[in-house]
Length: 77
Image 1: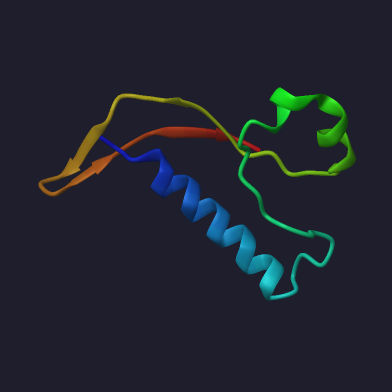
Image 2: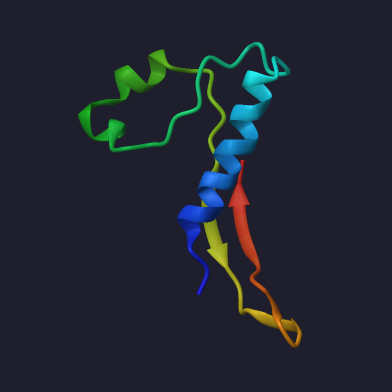
């Protein structure tokens, strides 16, 4: 079974490196959604523009060698 939190952290790390390397000067911060929509949409709209990365689905794992398995995961940006 794949741990999606590891995939999520990897995505955030790559994005954060773009900011620290000053390649994405237009990005202020990298944040993880933590229920902000629950308090109302107004606060979220003030944070736009944003890049949203969302897990959509996963497929059936496929054995590609004796010690490797491919996990088809689909994220939407």
